[in-house]
Length: 559
Figure 1 (cartoon, one colour):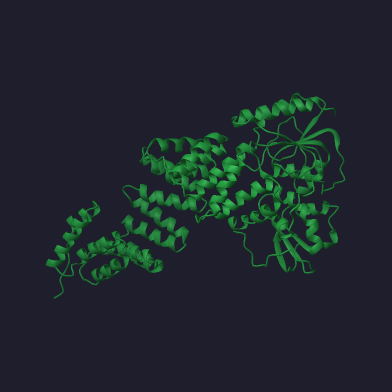
Figure 2 (cartoon, one colour):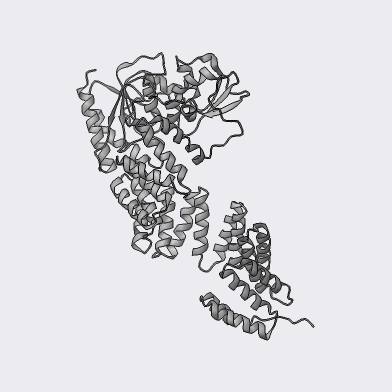
């Protein structure tokens, strides 16, 4: 007669196992197997020991033997399937692991461990929605849901669902308010949501409560950078890199801050060091280095390294990439990144059209109609067959351009400048992570009202001060025509600034400390005057100082 294993004689052994006494647990399990050869719970215990020691193939074999026994209660059999499923996943058999864990859920639907393990299987299989649903179920069933919600928050964060990640991490912090690791996770998610003020507070608390780790300091440094405290960010990221010298992400973060505070040689050396080792951050370092090179006019290397952005942005296409060769087969020119980038790079269409007929497939394509030097006969309708494709931002590299681009205007509109008409653009896309440093608080503009003899026109949509004129700005062409009527434009670094430069109108650029590579040593446009906040000044105070300077300069200008 087959024995009925109606009770689990291994409770004491499993207690020792959970306490970390692997040797003692093994002795207990072996003693049971000596008395009762093939005892399924003891076999399961030995499988758990094998997993703890990284011997997953052995664990699978042991659990398989245990499950062949009859008379095992459903709850114990469910635990065996959990062990089996996790061991299969560890061995790279995610689908088989999912099947085993699905059985565990059926046998014991109230066991949070089964749902959590099933979530791991779904994650390995790329079934992210089902993974999150399984983990949510596990969290609801758990007495202490902290571990599961931490995993769930991590999944949300990886999938770009930072708001949901914040929700999960808040629940963990509410349960464990003194846990520095929980606070660090919440701070990282808040940073991803651009909630910088709260992120700074939470990450500082995490450091105070035992989580002053390289990861936490990297997040805090990036938050300080977003808030405009570049010196603090530099110090924080240096400390993070000291804790983890081989971390390419932290090194890239530090290099970015060094660029912003003008320490370009140090930043370039740091990026070069990252590029020399395998850390997964080589392409980001290459791109960051490219912005230094381009800002200094070192175009031969700069345009080549600038192409690294394609892998960072995961720009892939089934259409062959154009190599710059001449011919009569059309080439599609596609867009990427922001409209300001597109306007800046429109100038390269003139040379590209000399080599191939072009189909323009980017958002600012209508502005090409305003380019008098562009052979319009070489611009074909956007739809239609093409032999190859090229990004607008890749044209300088593809065309082999190594000289400084001409700063002369390349857009032309029929509108003429009107005396005293000043266009103003004070903010960019708020979703940009460092927009707080780029955009000017609208209340800082009040000082401009003191300037007499001029009228201000808002060159952006949304909330506009009542003392500024509103104009239609539905398309990039609308914007170009309104800029054409302006005697001067005051703008932050966004689309408007590039349209002004491309039209050759005077531009007063309100540029953040550090600023983008496009406004460094190379003059991309003819008539640009830059106003920058005092170094090290807080964001709001810095912009107040800038606008006072702008108002004074306007008052002294002869109109």
